Image (cartoon, rainbow, N blue to C red; front, top):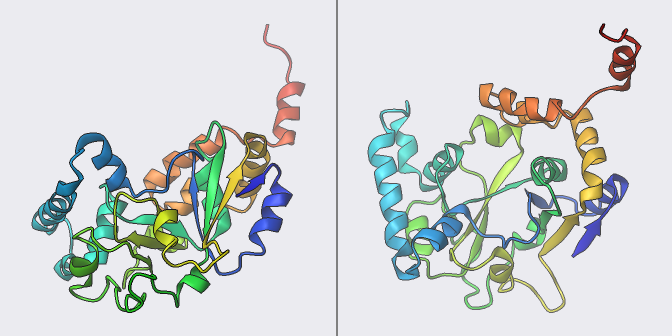
Length: 266
């Protein structure tokens, strides 16, 4: 774990993590679990039934989404379906990561009121690794973009594997956010626990970068200057509206001086 208290320290840290993937979370004290696991833990405590519930959600989405989707073939691709569901608010097993540490920092800090966190995943090393319990389960062998692989290696919630990558076709938000997905084979184990199957002695494939609250104001200002806002990361009206929250925090000194020079109201 690395603790960061100023922006220059963050820049120095991430500069050494070339070609890694990053994920920002507003709370540093929560385990790294996908949204479907967090939801099912609260509302569906019998974990034996989780695969049935996930299958049902996918089946219902596919059965009804065709009225909103121009390309019906997109609903035949498991990873694209999961990405579509995630994009529009469904709880899925996908974990959103990005190739940009600055995008991850934005997601960590934007709504944080305490310690936040950026997870750094060593994708260059993980690319060629397989879990110790079965060395045949390489990244290529379990690729969910291949027909039948998602059903075989992920939906049954039996294989503690990890896959990362992008759908065969990326949507506008994934492109804007330099996004990729991490797909765990088991829902109720945190990502760092699953990655332990891939690590060599003394190695960590997941680095935790804790951002202290004192960093937030200066970091958000620097991210604004880099044009990392909701408006740039969600290039639609939703993103523009969300970006106004960040605009409320940014006020350039000339505007302050101009306001202070105005005569006081009678």
